[in-house]
Image (cartoon, rainbow, N blue to C red; front, side):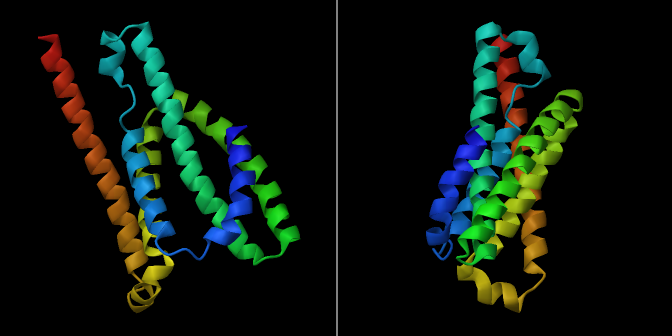
Length: 184
């Protein structure tokens, strides 16, 4: 329901936002943060040492992270739909109507897969980093640089994925070390 409400609200605003400089750079930076945050979820060591209240906080943290990721990726999706529609309200509504069921079906499928295969979270965080790198380079302010260096899009995508995975792993190791230290 939150994803649907976001898409409707952001579609109205997207036509105005599409030409703002640095919007995609900001969105890409938010995606980098979200990708790292995704890797900060409760892991197996936490499950053995936390009580029920802590696990509930972990669930709410995960929900907040997913909602933030959805907000940023929703904004990107809505901007893409608005750019494609180029002011044609019928096409804009059609694009929105098509994307909502895809998001609903896709999110429920991903939740089931993540429960069964936890490594998908790592893959998803890397993918968010990849999209963040591409999003940053696609900002209108960087058009001339992107045209001059076409491979920059791919380099930025790889760097975004690597950054999310490296920082996420580092923070997980720090969290585990702090937890072990507190248990001593």
